[in-house]
Length: 67
Image (cartoon, rainbow, N blue to C red; front, side):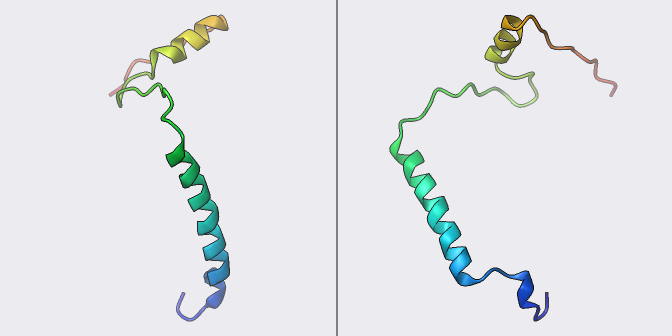
């Protein structure tokens, strides 16, 4: 990295990237929060995931912990 300018973005590219990211975060900030099915870490996921699978005639395959 020492003195190799090819490893770095030009400032105009970085500025344009931040313009895009800022426009996305502005829209997210303006919208009301969505009802997102969060779930606790270490669980199999939200109950809606099981419902989705069940509606498709599928189910999760539970694998026993080998630890």
